[in-house]
Each structure stands twice: as structure tokens, then as C-alpha cells.
Length: 94
Image 1: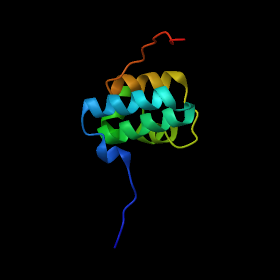
Image 2: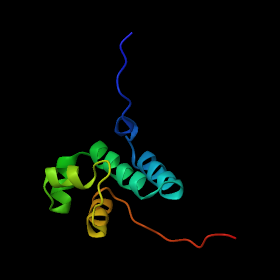
Image 3: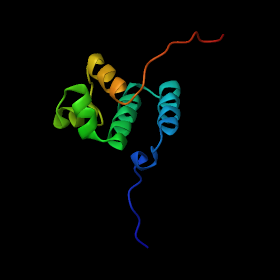
């Protein structure tokens, strides 16, 4: 039996699924996992579309959102806006 590599981007096929995935990673993940998740979402939507909306090149996006990358906060904010997301802060319950 032949198997293929699991790619979460294949399952991020609706705005609701994307939001649920990103919120779960934001709540439980570390900075590397959050950058990776944003990269998976950008891939699911299409790097060409994200590149056009952010004004960045596709190679720059792939590099900024690759495993182990440390993108600038402004890059993260551009990509979040392009994928239709935003950051909200809620107080943590004690």
C-alpha cells in the first residue's frame, strides 16, 4: 500500500476551518508552530494570491513562513490580513 505525506493545507478548505485551526495553534502553540500554521494557511489559499495581496514575492513568503523561520512582525501582520485574519486579545481568566 502506498501512502502519501500528510499536509494540513489539504484540509483547510473553508474560512471556518482556517479560523478554527489558527485559533487552536494560537491558543496552544509556540511561536514556531504559529508561523508554521500561518504558512500552511497561506499555502492552502495559494501563495500567488497571498504574494499579490501582501506585495511580497512568493520566494520571500516561502522563506518567511518556512520551518524555523523568524519573520518580522510586520510580515506576519501582512499575511494575516491577506488570509482574512486578525489578532484579538482577550483577558486570561484566573
